[in-house]
Amino acid sequence: MQLASRQYGNIVVVAPSGRLDHTAAAPFEQALTPFLGDAAAAGLVLDFAGVEYISSVGLRVLMIAAKQMRGRKARIAVSALQPVVAEIFKISRFDAVVEVFPSLRVALAALSPEARDAFDAG
Image 1 (spheres, rainbow, N blue to C red):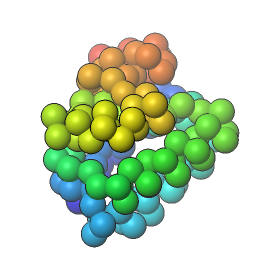
Image 2: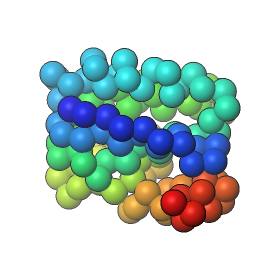
Image 3: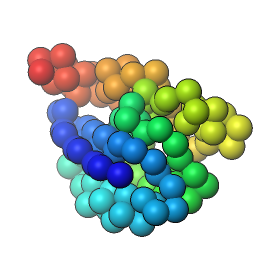
Image 4: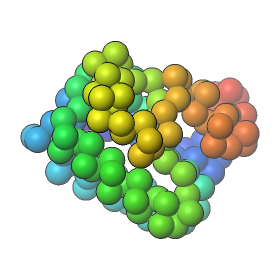
């Protein structure tokens, strides 16, 4: 698993790629930790365009992240789910745990118009 991050306005975007399975869950959780405590960020969008699979252990990491973000009154969302990952989210009803959007731009627009404008500006 690889991870890239970028900030658009007051929203942090984290883009993992590869498989979020048993092997990648702990490194993914450690990589997310600094973003979850960033008081300047009003929200976190996980751009899953590059995620080809997520296991129950990966979903657990997202559940913990969602709880931490809600605890500080910030939003968390995922965007651009690949078909297999979207099916896993649907079957597990994980779309009720985090907000799900069809694309990064739509997610940014829903969380913060400022972030969408920064994304559009490049």
